[in-house]
Length: 531
Image (cartoon, rainbow, N blue to C red):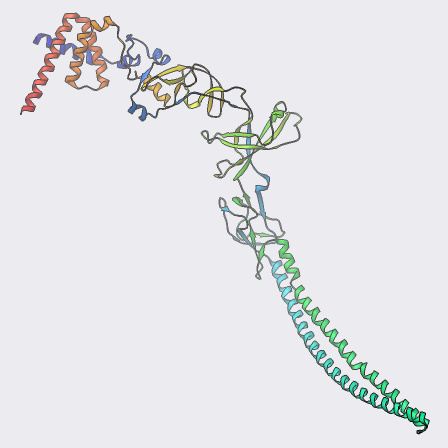
C-alpha cells in the first residue's frame, strides 16, 4: 500500500507541474475531444448553463420575439442649423459708447432682459433742449394765465357797469313811455297843446336809444374779446409744454429701448436664448447706429437640413416623422417632423433641401453638427419578426442570438438578418415567434461559452465504466485538497492520463490510496474535533 501511495504522489506531482494548457479542456465544454483547438471552439459555441445568480450578475435580460409593422424610411445625411428667426445680432440703436456689458458668452437670457448700456451724447443734447423748451413754455403759460385772469375781471366789471346802465335806461324808458301816453291822450281831448305831446314823443325815442346803447356797450364786447384772446394764449402755452419733449420722446420710441435723463440707453434682448458671441469691449464707441454688440441664439428648437434626391421627393410630405442621430451621441435618437420642403430642385445635383424641426430643450444638438436622418415615409405591408439590435452577437462572421431553453440553459442560434429600423433588426430566419431571446448579456454568454460555461460533460457508457474508479479517485483528491475549480481541471486531466498509462491495476491502487488518504484525513479531523 505504501508503495502504491508513493507511486501515486510521484505521478500526480509530475503531471501537475507539466499540465500547462487547461483552457483547451474547458473550451470544448466536455464533448470528449480534449484536443480541439481554440479556433474551433470560437467558431462553434455550445449551449451554456448559467445559474440564476450568475445570470443576474452579468445582466442577462430576456424577452419574447414578436412581429411588428415596421416603419420604412429614406436615409440621408444633413446638418443641424439654427432657425432663421432664432439667431439675432444685437446692435447699437444709437451712436455712443459702451458703458456696461451685462452678459457674457454662454449666458442664458430671456427676452427683454438688459444686456448692455450705452452712453449717448445725442440723447443728452435732446434732453437738454427739451428741458429748455419746457421751461420757456411754462413761463409763457404763466403769463397767459395771468392775462386771462385780468381779462375775466375786466369783463365782469364792464358787465356790472352795463347792467346798471341798462337798468337806468329801462327806468327812463318806462317814464318816457308813460308821459308820452298821457300827453297823447290829453292832446286828443284838446286839453294839451300838440307841441307838448311831440316833446314827450321825442323824449321817449331818446330813452329807447339809451337802452339799446346800454345793451350793446362796447367796453363789454372788448372785454369779452380780451378774455377769449388770453384763453387762447393759455392753451397755446400748454401745448408748447407738451411739445417741448416730443422730439426727445420720439427718438426714444425709435430706439425701442429704455433711456434716462443722463443719456444712458439700456439695450434689451430681443429673444430668449444663449449669448453665442460678444463682439464689443467695455468703452468701445460707435459713430453710427448699427454696430454689432453680441449674437443671441435660441437653440431649444433647431432645424436639420438634408438633401433629398428628386426620385424620392414624391415620398416626402410635411409632417412626416424623422429620426436623427449624431456621432457625438451614438446611443441617443432624436425625433422631429418635416417642416419645410424647398420648391426648387437644384439643377446639377437634382436634390431638394428638406428641413426638419427638432425640439432641443437640453441643447445637445449644436448648429453645425452633421447628422444621420431617417425620414419615415411608410410602414411595412406585413408584420415582421424583429428583435432588439442588442440581442445580436457578432462572432467570426456569424450573427448569433441566444435563445433560452429552460430556466438556466441558453442556446446560440445563427440567424439571417434583414433591415434595421432604429433599435430593431429584422430576423429573416433562425427564430420563431415567441422565442425567449437574450436582449442584454448575450456577449457575456458568448464569452462564458468560450470558457466552457457550466455545462456538465457528456460521457458515453463505455467511458463511464472505464473511468469510474478514476473519477472516484479524482473526487477523493478534490475533497482532500479542497482545490479551486481552475486547478481541478488540470489535476483531473493528469489523473486521467496516469490511469491510461498505469492500467486498470494501477488505477485501483490509486483509488485505494486516495480512499486511504481520504479516510486518514477524516480520522485526523475526528481526532481534532475530539480534542
